[in-house]
Length: 139
Image (cartoon, rainbow, N blue to C red; front, side):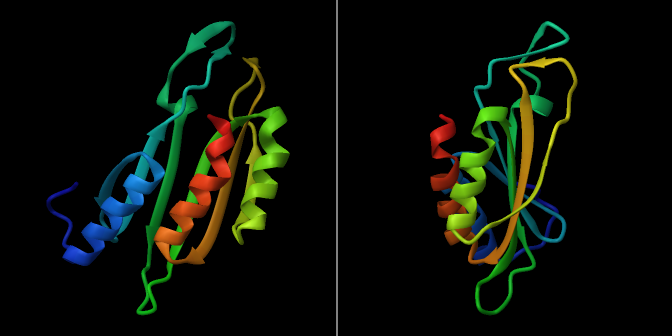
């Protein structure tokens, strides 16, 4: 965690819990923003070259702007294979999370990847659990 960011012990604990639920590394950025990264195990090529780049493999989640009722702006992003898009949309929507973007990042990748982004205003622990449940099928 960034040592220079002034945050409450409660925020630090919440951020650590958020990261544990999502199975990733948590850090606190200026804001404060709790930012969690997790690597996927996507087996991809781009331009016929194998890639393990974090630009391809990384899932990202965050929360910030925590209010007195314990709700925050919560965001998520992951790459998925094209044939997994509809299932992930359904999983997230069913759990009260808005899917905000579905788009490609690369050309000539194999298999075809789409990047999905989602958002909600909710308790970060609830968001983390709902996100974890929604993405569990990705492996």
